[in-house]
Image (cartoon, rainbow, N blue to C red; front, top):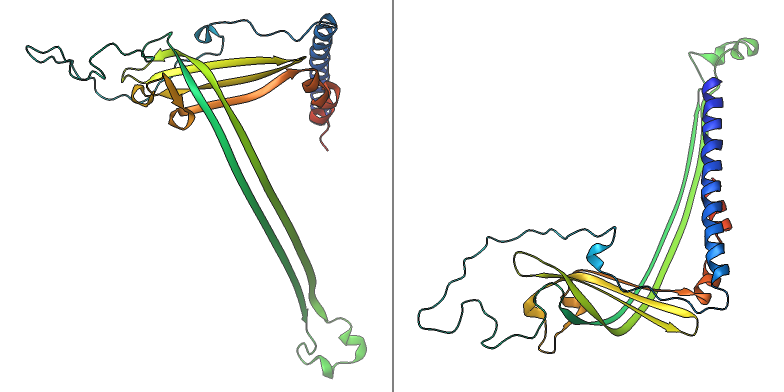
Length: 254
């Protein structure tokens, strides 16, 4: 009984703490929205992606470094991509253009049906010469030893119909140069239309050989690509579930 009471108190304490934290967060968000009344949605300041609190350098398997060799009496260096100066991005801080062209269509439909009926009836009608006994004596003998029945039914159906399309270009900055020459890039673009800000964030690892002559690269050639497209503003606030309802959805176990 003591353990049950302790668990109940702990659960109430955790629920109260979560509710208080959600209330403070909601109040802070409400205060921010009140201060922004009559003002357009603010854009994020330009900052260094590598200086963000959650930034982590990318670590990937690297080949054995090869020494740079030169040919005698030649201006050409082994491993060089061009004889003249290459204007494409090749070091930290350089900028290149990412061509985002996403056109995905997926359609799935699954249906599963299961119907099973089981009946068990075990009865002893003539147990050790029960017919020769008197009716009063036969009452002490087991008649139906086991009787059971079961019925199980399941009907599951799921449908997925998705059509995603995104066509745009975004400039990205080289944030890290890996030992094998590949580059880690990250780019962010914000566009404000009326009072709604649309955000596009892209990051990944690119090879210098995949960068085109116009200093652009296509999205399918970016390894570990991360693309985020969303927004914030009046329209997003209306479409987002209220923080009070979010607390109820998290707190209620049913």
